[in-house]
Length: 107
Length: 119
Image 1 (tube, rainbow over the protein chains, first blue to last red):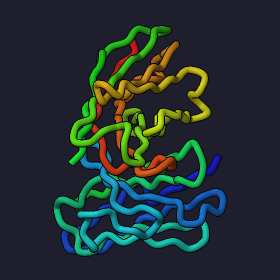
Image 2 (cartoon, one colour):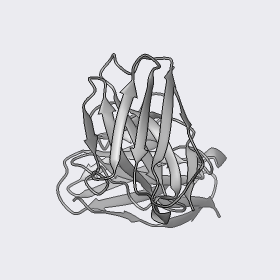
Image 3 (cartoon, each protein chain N blue to C red):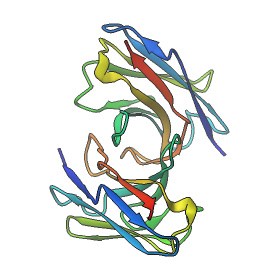
């Protein structure tokens, strides 16, 4: 199985800040990685697929990138609605597992 | 716009079978090239992909759950279902159904989720 290490597990930031979340995979998975946002009590929402492709309707303030086995999600100009938990998911091979999550909260 | 809605018992006894149904509206589960996923999330943890049934009716499961899981579809009702047998407390989770854009588990539309407690 492909293991994922997501960091940090929590992150405090202010409105207007830019933040970066990282997922490292245990093997080369190309660009087979997605990013989701989950607000409390809600289902996850697909933000980015194939490492850097923006899902329809998602603002361009969300940017994904990949370098080898390291994947990053950058969120610019944080707004109140952005404070949520973010998960990565590898889609290279079953069981298509998710990272442990990064909870982004207001400083 | 496709919508998904989970339904089923919120409480299941240990060793029994968990059964959930997902009703899809706004699109047919048997057309297009979509895959219909079940995903669960234990409290405070990341989601866990359970498996899918494809628009053609083929299934694929998480190897860690494969021996206990079955996903089926009723195209006449535009529903797909999850059965997980021999449940234990560790199966307590929020269960989501979701539309997959391909066979990779990428899910672009989700139901609201339903909490199932095994006790």
